Image (cartoon, rainbow, N blue to C red; front, side, top):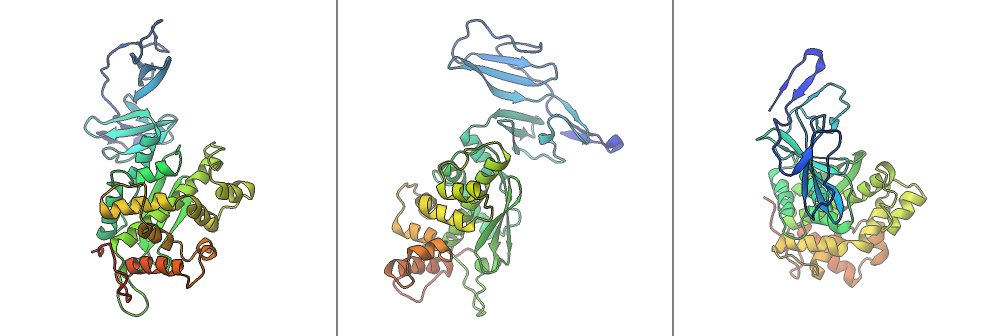
Length: 353
């Protein structure tokens, strides 16, 4: 695949060993386009530096639809293709740069790039999730969320809004001050979600284990995914030159842009309440039933609202002890504890084992 060499701190990596393509083209400074192209006509072009570019004539415009990189020699401070330098690239690894999504194919040692559509970017976000620190049970919940047919994690990002950058998300399990989950920014476009070990393993201070159902874990994961998305909107607005990234999110816009407010838990929870409960509940319902839906039942909305019970927005909406408050609380706590003392409630999820 590649060779590394310590002398002069150079790194050598084979990117591809040659390109075969069809259509007209050229090997000068720029491609030679025909005077009267036809719809969907393809031009293959090999640049002087060895970059293979495929153009396609679509709606009267020549568009780049494929990029393959030539053999490259990269130094310790590379000027070109630095975003593709990895000591051990893995098969199907994806990298986003300059409006393209590049994928590494280990069989032919090649990075290939295609235009980053919303769908490809959302899928790349899903692929970038680092679940190496999760236990097998919790990882299985995440894997099931990824495989949903309609409301999977990539689709959550697409439904919540347009994405322009691939974000890196890492999960870990450790004590979290009794909060089932929390998400923070570790660097621009890089985020970390902590799942509370006490929540996952049922340590409630009494010595009695009450581990949650997989449904409760999935709800917390979905909730934290939305926090990740909100952080990414702020990064788009601040770091990636997307000044309108927050235009459709009035609460976030007010806090982040007008007041330059970065902490934002309350703002994010308020935006979740206003805009995203049904979207999140749809994913949760498909996770549990296997049936896609855009109209989740009250039960799954209750579970998602239950993840907000300690927030100011929830407390402002429901008076403690009211019928709605008790219904939401009992539905959520029954899944969180995998059982209830009230015979009217029983868990719909399965124990996470």
